[in-house]
Image 1: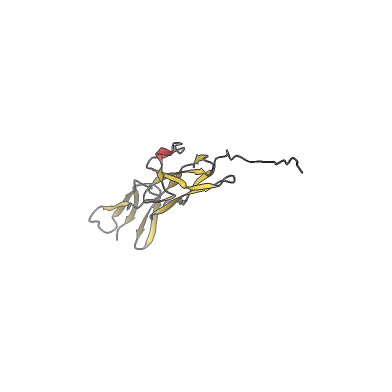
Image 2: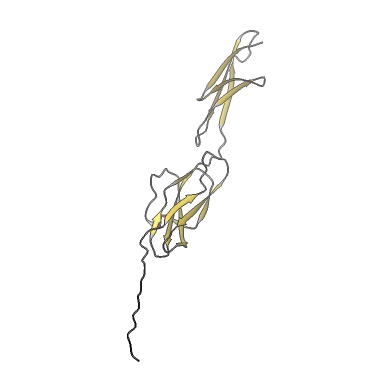
Length: 168
């Protein structure tokens, strides 16, 4: 018996780039190392972990560069100072995409603080002005609080901060 057999062949081609992101960015300033990790999701052919790359930038980025030549191979990196991190990945069909930049606010620098008072040798009932100045080039200064004998006397949101109290 001779006959004809027919077959139906179907295929789908994945032309959709993966979704790429960076995880691990702290929401506020921190003083410890953070780990940035390239994340990838692709519902079509799946992500190819061997293509994960990252980029560290000391300058603020509004967008991540598209060229994979800008990136370093690896799925994660330790961030030890204030940086912007980008990710790059391909799916198993070869489609590629970069993440949006993620800001890692890491500041291990010690805030600089100075305190002085005038006059240096006050007499009884003479007004004494206490001045405190603070600066932090990386994360900035949020507030200065001046205490006298364990009690909070004033709080300032800018530097310098002064408080005057009678001596004696």
